[in-house]
Figure (tube, helix red, strand yellow):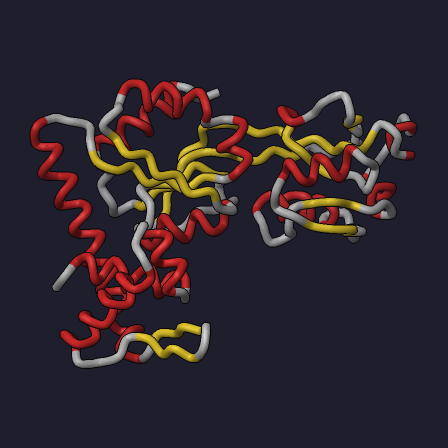
Length: 290
């Protein structure tokens, strides 16, 4: 079966769009359509229903998708294994990471790795940590460098690389910044700006309040910590940020009897063997462990 046609099929299925699939594969939309058409002819079944701009998988497409993904994964691993017989560190390294880690932890590691392994094609995808965990399960990436889930269950396993202390903060002009003593009950009456409460970080904050039978007064939610920092710094509410993100525009709030720490690190699949490029990057991460 034509692997190029399978790549086109998987891309269209993932994006529910021929045009977005074409962008991902650096092809024209007619080229994508031609590959899908040839695959449908070979299988003697339509793979997509095309209703205006909406593209959905047919029953045949739903049957093919997991098999196509497995075939492409096996092809990538076979190609990598053969090239690595010579001892080279080559091929593609596919990593999922969060925007925060990508901005604040990975730059020096990426610089060192890219300098030492110029033949490796680095492919980084920036996602919420929860989405990255799913990518690892599906085999879409070699591993993820993200906020670790509080409890990892098979087939996932994780290793802590950084311990990320979280700090309650508000704008220096916020009324909370003028209080000498603050507890969670006081915060529960003030507007909060936090990551979505379904994220690992959001759950940490929510649990701290729930343990004291307090409700959060959530003003707005976004998963981008840089955006949260900006909104808090202009006085729109209090928030919780990694200590490494604090600056002169934010006032740390000393909350009595509360300590929040999240674990950042590597999430990988227990049954998937990492190639030499992934092993080299993983070793570099461990060497930079704090």
